[in-house]
Image: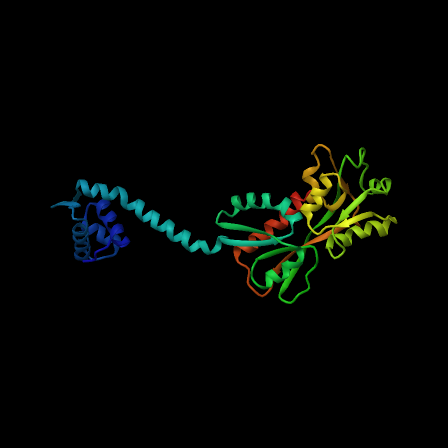
Length: 305
């Protein structure tokens, strides 16, 4: 006798209980009558209770038998559901997805990404890593991140880049320096002596800013260079200077008292944003799902769109 309960035994028990006859149940279950009788006796021994009253007309459930009949279909149903879910799990995005991205992108994409991912892919754990655009390719190659967002098209063996959006620029300036701001390029032209502190010339953003000077013949009054976005913002808020950053980096200050955020709306003064993935390592369902979600969200929530 087996010391554990088999699903086959439960199914046969249900057949005996519902037909009220070992012989009829044997026909339904495609098993011999002696074999089914032995199976039911073994079940009673396993549970240490009497399940049936044997009569000349068949079998009748005891109180214990009626109790088991209440649970047996539920048990079999749950087992079947578990089998279906386990087999289907390989088609469900799950696991950790690490994403490396610059601060300006992280500021506006992180919240909606986590919110939508939680609803759409509850088994996926998002890990956001704030990192400079230049470090993304190396982190992808080393396997430190699954997805990377950069401001340059990456032409490196083993990596694939695809453009996901274009990012506009914005000017952040305190009203202690400018009381009545204009709009975009006009603001820059109308305030030629305004002091700026900008990212250094080896910074990707500076290449885009230089287009302003070249296209409109403007010489910005750059008094210093700082490589940290948070420090540039802090200096501007304190009224020490104005700065030009990605619009998404300064958009949150648009409604702050004493501060002006001026969007530069010129298609020539924008930078491309790319999604990078490894072409060597096969992406998991989770990575592919989050990649597609990011591409959708950048089009929906990009504050410069």
